Image (tube, rainbow, N blue to C red; front, top):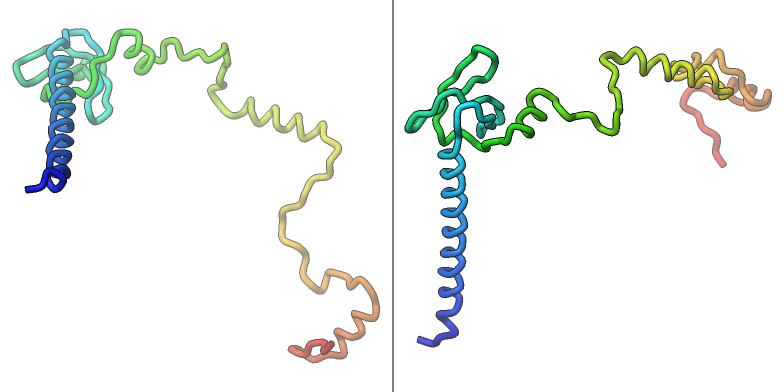
Length: 159
């Protein structure tokens, strides 16, 4: 056989080898991460739940999902082991102060500020309600009014 015809097969086999190698590395890193868990460590499950490790067993782990609430999970369901600072930031909100900004607990302080801005503006308020009935609206000129009265329904001007 010609080496040129074998080239696509060689490339395909090489790509498959590289993909399986990277997948095996990821699996080994995940297994090592799960084996390094200690009681008291904060974790995130693959479902996105944050909890604290209470006990470790061969294939399972006991997680405290809330104070006094324990759940048993498979070790494979642990998606990430978090360091203490990151766990406290996510779960307890420690260190979430962004540039000293204070966020109000309710929206009343936001609406009061918006009302104060509206009162200070000189712009006329826009009425978003429905417009009045057609008979309440006056025509712009009297001739148009006369012509519209003379026509029956459905007739149009021919130009």
